[in-house]
Length: 137
Image 1: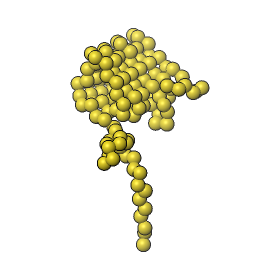
Image 2 (image 1 turned 90 degrees about the horizontal axis):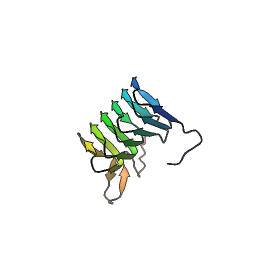
Image 3 (image 1 turned 180 degrees about the vertical axis):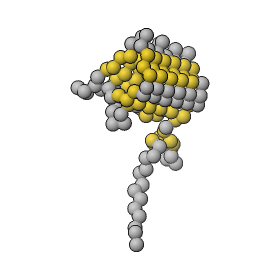
Image 4 (image 1 turned 90 degrees about the vertical axis):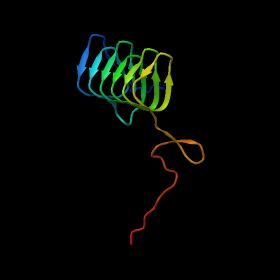
């Protein structure tokens, strides 16, 4: 990922427990435990990494996610999602692009955010090429 001058990295170290929702920009690395939802600001190209031994109990809404720990909740990745070999996700996984390594576990549904239209070309849900106008009389 390209790094802009404002990208910061936040670390939640091993043996650290955070209770409550986290909202961030930049990069977030979780080695400890988070009991709450993890969300990136919608205008950011944020990245979340949950390392082996890291735990999130809550919903994740981050553009780019790498999981090699445990997640108990739904994961929403609007960009790239990587499930490494020790990843365990107990919840539904919503993704645009997914990479799953042998050994990763998902106990829930895999839901693609890419829709195939009648021209067989993938496009994001909610995208419309046709402009609609309404005349008020």
